[in-house]
Image (cartoon, rainbow, N blue to C red; front, top):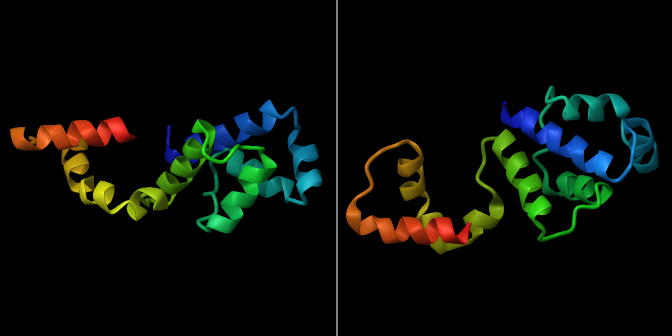
Length: 124
């Protein structure tokens, strides 16, 4: 499943969780039903702007700081090929990203870097 499809499925899951049909959700929030339908089906990418994503999160009643909140923003970042801003804002964590990337690619991680990798995973 692509990042777009995963984001769309999650968006729809959150909307349905609130007991909203597509049409009622869009009418209540003054959104275009056609665009939200395409978003939920993974045909279009979510907005890259934080303001629009914040707006959607409010409409979906996703509590800030919750697991759903992080998942929503992480999926949106993945759709645009970006690293979530909260990770980049943490200088120590951002400095460890190359180690994570090497690991994800299946490259060898030097033994002395394993504690760093373990800490990075613990913090996520």
